[in-house]
Image (cartoon, rainbow, N blue to C red):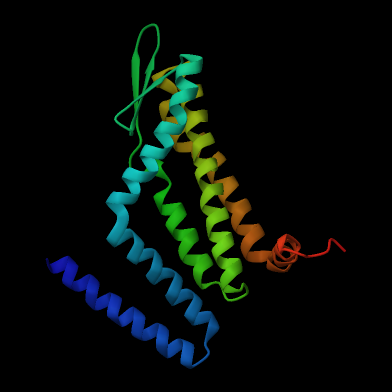
Length: 199
């Protein structure tokens, strides 16, 4: 109850701060305050649901690959089971593995990024969320593949080092293209407009 009260007080102050910054035309501060506030709001209000949703979608997407290859099986929309000759490994898709942090952080940033129009931000938000999902999908596949080949002794390396390195290189690539090459992205989006010429 206390945390909920504190949240709604902070949420009200955030909305007020945004209105002040917008009237003052302080675009940089508006972007920073807006992004952080939206990220915090999404995490506080929707964390449990988003973790369940992302883990379930990820697990169900992996299920056909597990059935086809026979390398692993999925259980309860958040658990991957790998059966090896001498051991059985369990990979639990929790808050960290779900991609919720990266997705909500990107969503918060793009929704307040001042160099894009509202339509462009909406398109990039959907595209970015899909991109992050597939990056995470291939990260989990990488982790599962290495564990199936090397066993539990490889868990720390593949989960904490190799998997994260693979995932964050892809995330940095997304951020670099969306937030530092906005003129190129806008030119590309304009070509996707109905009736646009390719000149």
